[in-house]
Image (cartoon, rainbow, N blue to C red; front, side, top):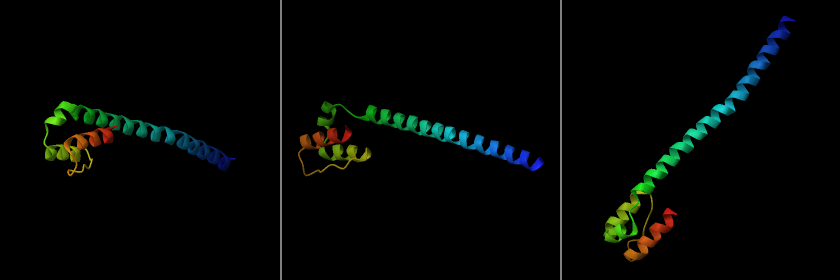
Length: 90
């Protein structure tokens, strides 16, 4: 009988562990999503208006895009580079 009690207790502990673990994973996923949303908002705040982008040189425009992880083709016109940047940011 004593062995059966130990088995039941272990089974209950295992069930609690497996029930609690997904909740912990879900909490961690939610924290990561919150962090990603914060980064997205920070990036959005850093994006200049189209008028501000037009004031940049092609080199500065390319540098700005690179900071955001976007590769632009400097052989294109500045207007086309701005258009490409806006497409990438959507």
